[in-house]
Amino acid sequence: MNNETALQRFLDLAAIPGRSGDELPVATHLIERLVEVGIDESQIHFDGAQSRTELKGNCGNLIVRLPGKGSGQTTMLSAHMDTVPICVGSQPVVDGAQVRSSVKTGLGADDRSGCAAILTAAIERLAQGDENFPPAVIVFFIQEEIGLRGARHLDTSAIGQVDRAFNFDGGDPHKITVGAIGGERMSITVHGTPAHAGVAPEKGASAIVMASKAVADLHQRGWLGKIEKPEGAGTANVGVFHGGDATNVITPEVLLKAEARSHDAAFRSRIVEEIRKAFTSAAETVRTDSKLAGHIEFESQVDYDSFRLKDDHASIQAASQAIEQVGRTPYCAVANGGLDANWLYRHGIEAVTLGCGQQNIHTVDERLEIADYLDACRMATWLIAEGA
Image 1 (cartoon, rainbow, N blue to C red):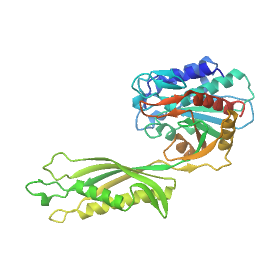
Image 2: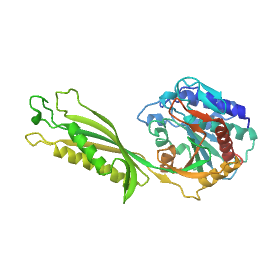
Image 3: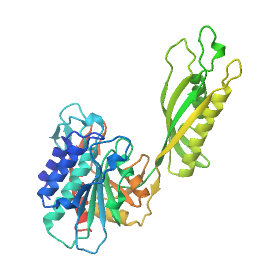
Image 4: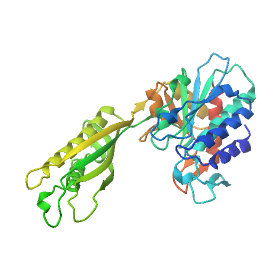
């Protein structure tokens, strides 16, 4: 592998604007590079996932098949093409042992470094000219940064049977993320009764008071923030609170948005139920002078389910070998945030997540450790070539 060429692939990709929903320029670049080195265009296609996501973007997940006549395990490599908005306009430059943006933007190493590592692996495999490698499939996801939507709406019929899978995303290249937490999102509308706040406040029932009582109750009973109960552990947060138009009106309606996370799906459901009960109870306790109480509308949606692979899983074993091949010591971890791998697991594709050396992601201080990135390129190559 030529280190300078591999690094240039990342620099080229990081300079392409491509926030969530606008991944087509990134996909076009990847396709052009793959066709240049001999991938038949019939092996490259989009799965139309953008037509199934809430945000109707300009392309779907990009799927590339690497044919092979070998009889070994079928391997899948994946990364996501989109970046957060702060990375739009990135101008990547090499700064010693790192890459940074030369302007006040994020770098976009999350996850253009994953895309570049996989692109390098595909090119290296083709350069070896060995038709006896087992088949491999590559997926470049859309809309990861806004809720794992590309992975969620992946057309799995275009993937086929996969024996082991490796998702290249943030972190250290020697860390193997073997599982991740599950998350659920809630939308809560609290309805009260309006009244003039100065003339007849007693005729109103404030939705702000109702919601505030619910949040305070959850906090006092240990159901917000870090949650540790005899029956389980997790986290919860109320992150959005909208309502009110004027100071002289008893507010009749507020909208709140919250989330719950846990590695235990049953306990996550328990957190959601505690939140629902708290808001229902609070709405019933705030009344007008004619005893008219408030009420709520409560909606919840699972963003992603938790998962954890067994220690002897083929994906873990192969990832460990790949890490050792580059002279590092592997270790396993479980993530407290959602990954594309959460939805892959639900689709029946059991993936581990590997890092590429991204640091300080989603900030203007984002950096890519060049040595880590190059090792990720070597690992990805080994997984679909020598180690296939």
